[in-house]
Length: 294
Length: 291
Image (cartoon, rainbow over all chains, first blue to last red; front, side, top):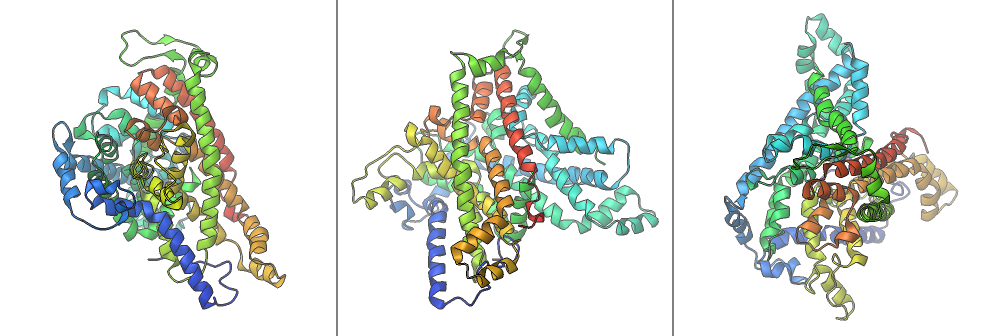
């Protein structure tokens, strides 16, 4: 795996002299113990998801990888297989649909806005950009209540889960910042060849802007996949419930079936985890870039 | 080209925000047959100075302050320690960085569930078991989330676990901006590890550190998911000790249908968050200013 920061470590001490072997072993040991302690809850999740439920909440037995089976995973699909509970594949479909719509729709809409605001000349451009900057200050939490009131008739629909999140001021800002740093000469060449702004954007600018698209996509995906507040307000019907909300319902049943709950958790985190492992560098950059705003 | 995004933003952020301010001056209830009635600042009076009604909200404000006051130094400090520890030329250091970053990708709903198990009040809960081992069996079951004294601490711990990797990454980037020469110079002056940290590292990332602390405080005021799940979802989290401003807004809007009061809470929330954000904006590009 490559370095998480995406930047080569310029060690504060590494440059001094080569590490003594003993000290290096000590360093690894200290880091290893610390890291192990830190990932213990995640290990607990994964191991527990394969263990019989009565062994999950049983002291350290929950961490001992014995009696492993896929029963809990089968159990998740079996217990969530009726109209009243909802179906597992249904929750997964809702989450996938909403996240895809928000990510893809957001990339399209926000990148075009970022481009138009940074490159094209039109009346009202400055005003529009001011609006974007101003609205970047408004966290979703502070509009959740009026949105809940305004869209009360649209509760329990899939589209209402996605709609408020497609246009995103911070994404527009990120695209704007990126496009402002791209040299104009390439676009000018395209314009001399007779390409209009749309064609210039889609066939010239877009292909060379992969980094910003990747980091915006990943950040949006991460936030949207775990979204909880809005679904809490808008969804009561199991057939349109996204995964995180269903997890909160599923784990609240008495008595809780811990093995199945953890298996559900693994299924919930798996898509993000896979993306994380594959696109690690983009991932960290995307997340770190959110710091500019949050 | 910008039309879709700008309209979307105005429609889903701008208008609702203004609407929140308007609603906060009305007595509006969901599902009530009576039309909204103008209320002046009554909602705000009820939130802050009504002897019968304001206790709950003031408590949520206090809880949020306590949460922020605990999370900000803890998470920033831990992130700094990790960043310094991981900022070395060791083979495989990337793996360690990834491990500490890992919980950041976990949805908060899942984090709440994992920690509900770890902190379980049963003597079979992971933490109680560990403490029992450490005290040779003297420790017995303790209800971490259910008792008022440790409920908030529980939320703090799981929140820090989930979020610390995020701050760590930002600080790591800040550390890498410190010129190597400064360390070389310090070594010529025979500065030890601690002195180097104190006189080179710390001044070098001071701005990043302030930025990260303010960022964390904004995030701390937005805390909601884990609190809601652990209170409402059978986790047995002590409600009074952990209700936060957003929890209050959601329960009042959703459970009580009192849109007017929930909107007023939202407006107060916005004022707090925007103040912190504006403070933070002054530190947006800390790296560009050399130590």
